[in-house]
Image 1 (cartoon, rainbow, N blue to C red):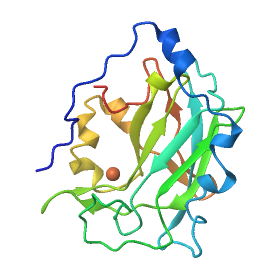
Image 2: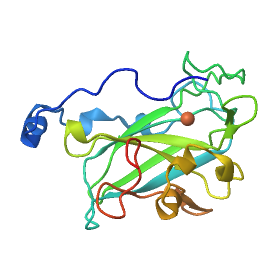
Image 3: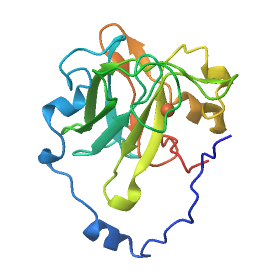
Length: 204
Ligand SMILES: [Fe+2]
């Protein structure tokens, strides 16, 4: 069974948070091009699968929008296969789908991606992961990077997913599931901190 935790000890960061503010990268408009947020148009043809949009707002604990935030996503293709050499799933790759995207939040903290719904994939001979999209948000400083996963509503595999249920608080677990409707597509908001903060990998 492959280990899912880091093999190396954490690197200690400077105790002064301002040091991270000053030395971390700053993301401006050049950090993401217009096609970076449309995962269906990054190749010559269209990818297989169900086209979907995923959008939402990034806010802080007071509900204030977090503007200019670099939001990155990565996901499996519609068959449940990552375009990554470490993925041993025998499901086919899609030559028209890489599965990575990025964008900056706008003045109201909004992000938006166009992609295809990722397929479920097997973890071992018995268990399958539900459809999900990995998210990374860089916060306002390099040391604040948050990594988490977004799920799709009504997915029957959610109830049996060990990673989703590693989030022990049912309310926090529910906040990882997007809402969806035919007009707005899938909508998923992220709260960076506070009591309603979005669960991130490394938090409990
Ligand atoms: Fe995944």
